[in-house]
Each structure stands twice: as structure tokens, then as C-alpha cells.
Image (cartoon, rainbow, N blue to C red; front, side, top):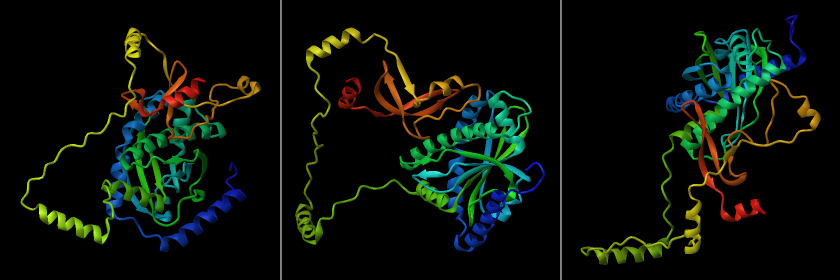
Length: 347
């Protein structure tokens, strides 16, 4: 790209992008105002967590404001972008599968990569793209946590982010009318950078409808016509009578502790135990470990959005999700490991 010419891959991507826009615009209607509002309100609720996460990753006071969201098409959206953009694809792989990406100008990309690598005048090379992808992965992870809480959909996950710096005409945008959210970001230097988040038409519609859907009411059993008739007869006979309603007494399902055990455990209730939260693990060859340096990215065996393991004295006891409390990381317990699973871990 140093001589200003497009490579064959970029030409192919450009043609693919134009074709997808022209053919999809007529087939895919624009989102409704209620869908736009639902998406914008949800994304607005996540900016504080995103600001805190980026502040910790960059070591600078990051402030993100917005977004302003709208449904738009390729041609109208490209008019808002600088000539060259950094595109980070972070498609949703499950839950609400489909296209999801971020775009930013070169200045914003260099600022993020420079702060994370503690390097000035950084070039947008492969290492910088990897660092920017890591930053976006953190943002998407916090969004997935919030989206899971609001929709109850626990299967939401995204593909590993992939970043590239390309001319805006080559950016592989979704076809048809997609949702675009524009954020303003201050990386601590008082300079405002604009970042755009894009949701493909199907993803935007699915998420908006899920956010707007009321809580599901419990379904009544289908008793059939004959049974309903019998019920109606019984009910008519009860008119004028006072029903004797009593709460159902369920048996205690918790395991019964042996009195002797309860007495013994009270002796160690004030003993401290080490509790750790494990984000993930991986295995590396010795030569790979010796070759690590500042800026090396280590890929773990957990996907973004998966529960983290909570260990006590290196034994798994629970699973949870990572949260940000003020400026500290925390973990919210979402699952307690059963005694049987604990015994298997100890064996």
C-alpha cells in the first residue's frame, strides 16, 4: 500500500463489498425507530464499563461517550469515514450470530496501540493490529456480559477479533441497512476520536427484539376440552364458598449435615484459604516461552464471554463472570460446582 495501489485481495474485497450492498439494499428493510432506540439505549449502558476496561489496559484515563445510533447503508456510511480506517471484525458466533465490527481512524488506532505497548510514534503493523484486536475483544466481552444479563441468552459468544488497516472503500461492511453506532473517545489527552460500531441487519434486529421482549410468562398446561369442562363444573360449584388456600410445604433439598461434622467444622471457620480466579490456561513449548517479550499475545483456552473458574486452594468450587467494580476487577458467581464434581477434581 506504500505506492497507493490496491492489491488483488483489496480489489476483491472492494468488489465484494459493493456487490453485497447493491443486492442487499432492496431485500433488507431499514430497522424501525423502536429497534434503533433499544440498541442505542443498550449500548449507552455499557460505555462506563468499556471506559474502565480501556483505562486499565492503556494506563490512561479513557472516557467514552455516546453512542448516536442509526440504520444506514454502505454509501451513506462511507461518507462519514476518513480515507483510511482500522477495521476490527468481531462477529458474533452464537447467541445472536452475524456480522459485528468496529471502525476507527488511523489516529485513534495508533493512540490505542501506542498506549497499550507504551510506545510513541507506533506503526500500524501486525503487532499493533493484534493489540488493537485485544482491546476490542475486551470491549466486546463486557458487552456480551451485559447483553446476557438483559436478554437471558447465555450462549452469546464472538469470534476472535481480527484487525486490519485498509482504505475505507475496501472495508467489508454488511449488506443492506445495518446499524451504526458512533462513539466519541478521549484517551486522556483531551483529543476526541470517533469510533463506529456496526451490527449487521439480522444481528441488530435479533438483539433489538430480544431486548424489547417482555419476560416470558409461565405456560399453562393444555388440559383438553373434557378436562376444562370438568374444571368449569367444579368451579361453578365453588362460587360463593371461601377457598382454603395454604402454602405448599416443600421438603428441604439441602444435604443434611451430620451433627459431629458441624461441630468439627466450627473449629476452622476463622482459617484463611487462598481464593483465585483463573481466566484460562494454555500450553507452550519451552522455545515459545523463552521467545516471549513485551507485547506478546498469549491465547488462552477460553472463549470471550465464557465463565471463569473460581478456585480455593487450587480446587475448583465455582464459576463466574468478570465484572468491574470502580477501577478493580471482580467476579460475580454464576454457578456453584456440585460436591460430586468437586470430588472428581480432587481425585
